[in-house]
Image (cartoon, rainbow, N blue to C red):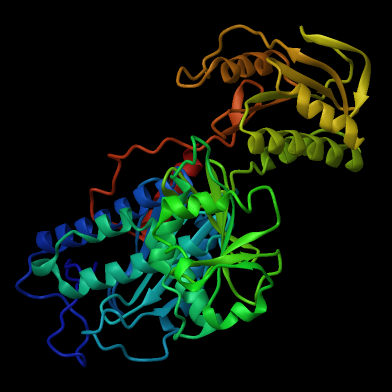
Length: 512
């Protein structure tokens, strides 16, 4: 907001002029345009990332022109808790405003220079400067179960480009389409990252076409063979690097199936299922079968049944499931369990052992696709849980005993594991009285765990659902549960100045 009460906007009559508000544009019009532009982009970014990574929030800091205020729009309080860091970076310090090495042509919205990352723990951010937007930086959550943050970084980079484009066009040409682009940007984000890496490693003359490759991976993943889901790997190699592979079998030139022939390739995958062999593609057709040796650069599609993973060499980029790409590793990190265990007076070796045992059992259930429940009982004295007791508890520090526990976890009921790292019982029934935190949308296994943990307050209950979600339950609540975002919640007013936002948040914290 400028001193005369008007909102700064962008005027492009000449690239040499200072960016200023169009005098024909009323204050109300300026606020409405900017608010709508920000809202559409934030909503599309949030919705798209929620599909890609699970429930996600988005926020933005921006300054339209060099003399304008730094504004913030954070409709879901993503940046709450980061107030001291934001105050230090933007209020106590003016480096962000002065760190500009060139004059930008206001007519070129796509000439964007990245700005320094803020390195806020738990967040992913990307920002830039352009002729139409002096400074902008977009934020979203860094979920702990992401294969890689790079596709999400590409997503935020595209948000920077879209906002710069919309402001350059001003209100008269605003279409509101940026939110729709960002909402459907999942495959494009993966595409953009793979393209960047290929150009970096192979040069811009690479012959592998990324879009058909991604379409084929999703198509093959959805193609059953006699009712069975696909397993096996396809390695995609730049033709000039094919000599680095060791072919076990090479198909005749006119017998190499095209990559878009999903049914044929799905059948060929049977030849490399449950082995270290891989199908080889040059990006357009399947050329043969190679061993496990990879070239210096390649893409790999690893089909693992209902899910799969896309890799660059041996580096995971993303997963795929139900015809879409996802950021998740499909393996619970169980960092909540680590945090709870730190609150107990346990020997470091004992604490790490319990965590490793829980992780092994959970990952086994996830990989095998069945549900189970684990009770990590941290009580000083042993208290039985109704179930199948063992005459002598099994020490889970031994691999063969841990494998036995994996088998026992398939039975109905929970495994009862004490702090001594021993399995004392299995097929245990968890009971308790009804509590307010129950969730009718979840099954009996989940809600029984809530009731039980409310009664046995020194027990960590880990619930693995057959459809992959893992819940860590402690003292009647799910720990680390992602908040449900109201899709209708949005920033309907003009964005706050950062200083006003910080003052409001500090006042709210003081009142609490």
